[in-house]
Image 1 (cartoon, rainbow over the protein chains, first blue to last red):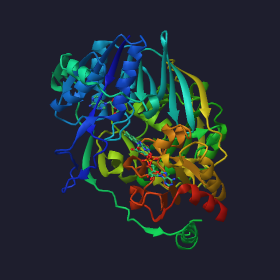
Image 2: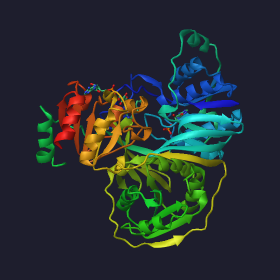
Image 3: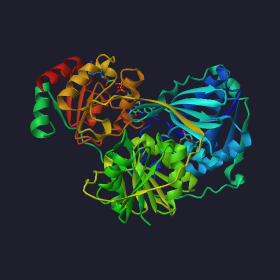
Image 4: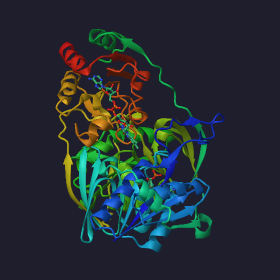
Length: 249
Length: 308
Ligand SMILES: Cc1cc2nc3c(=O)[nH]c(=O)nc-3n(C[C@H](O)[C@H](O)[C@H](O)COP(=O)(O)OP(=O)(O)OC[C@H]3O[C@@H](n4cnc5c(N)ncnc54)[C@H](O)[C@@H]3O)c2cc1C
Ligand SMILES: Nc1ncnc2c1ncn2[C@@H]1O[C@H](COP(=O)(O)O)[C@@H](O)[C@H]1O
């Protein structure tokens, strides 16, 4: 079975973002970028499916700027076989990304598509569900366990209150949650080998897909900073403050 | 055109999150309908009919909607959406699952996790784990929106809306419910609790969470955790508070043995009063805490439980 994994280049999760002085957006100049953590988990799951003999080929795809090749190379070093880079310097919205991914799904005909559950920049949590809608496929979002059984896929999902298990008809869309697996690090020989793996590059413009923005970013602000309060010296003082000052207990 | 609010319910009970979503919808004004989709949903519908500000409750009662499978829910909502200018649902794991699917079926954007409504087409939402707050205008005619319920006070239950049965059965048939493992709820639910006490990696084991529970019992609090505590297997997944877990904003949040990573803060920094107990006086959690106690939790927690 061919597995397609969609990955996104985002700000590194350790970086503290700053809002631009003119409040037009966050400032990403000279900021460290990386593969979205949930996408790393999706790639790792595909690699494990291949190691278990379920996946036969892993194709990674990203929709993004030239520099996103770095993240494709990382995925190739982790075990993906080949990559597709749909280039655009614009920040596409989730719906537009889903439309581009739909086109790639039509071309590649994967048995399973893996995405992260959420990109940690926009915190949208939409693209996988939208791709599922556009392709008419079943969706298993927020997955913490995936098992392929013949033409079906069993997925355990993290939901409010606990876990839910669904059985999906293949081909299907899975979005990875944090506990699906713990991604490995790429080894140096694999990083070297990845340099020779193919990346098929094309431009969004050539696909003839409607990517017109459906939203307008009016402003971006820094959240109100919470002021650090006081230190209390003992449990007694804490209880006293909570009762008599904050009046919350 | 009006607003359609998708109700959330569990075990035949209307979830309080629905009253908060209605509250967000009321900022826009106009008619508000509530959709109750489920199996055997009449008591939920009756409860929804009492939500203040609601005109009509529309009930799709069929086995197809029993487990809120995204494919069936989205197909149903997409059919109804043509009658409305907005569709609102909670940014719960259920809403996050089916709402983007609705939006794509209708070829419109979805606005995720709003914390304020500026006007009928302009919404405020956190991005970058809450490090920035974006104001976004939705350009599509139909607005599909999920609501961070902790940011809105619930409406009262003083209404009497009409209840209407819908005969729309959408059974897409590509997914099947197998089972659910839900935590037995003796404690208040995390996202609705007035007081939350959370433990982190500092607790050291699941066994030691008993120390947290002893304090929670005294305060009638819900118990939460950091991702590190969940990953280490101390507590179940759905205890996780943060960017990718639950967002909470209780009256009182007590963080114990939690360092205060930005991803954790994203889930609790809007709490009214924050208490941090940590043995490291430089832990970042103290920067957001109203009351900080530098102490070993293994001494502080039993003492706290004792003296409360
Ligand atoms: C994409 C992504 C999403 C994430 N989402 C979340 C999320 O939703 N929620 C979340 O919480 N994290 C999330 N994280 C993880 C986050 O970055 C931190 O790793 C995590 O919050 C750390 O948990 P912790 O504070 O319990 O552990 P640590 O950072 O290890 O802190 C443990 C603390 O316990 C204190 N301590 C130890 N022993 C004692 C003692 N005896 N008495 C008192 N204090 C003690 C220590 O001083 C320390 O401050 C995410 C990370 C990524 C990359
Ligand atoms: N530009 C993109 N290129 C490829 N995949 C993407 C892109 N944007 C989002 N995705 C995928 O969709 C997931 C969820 O993103 P989002 O819906 O934006 O939160 C990510 O983890 C990726 O797997």
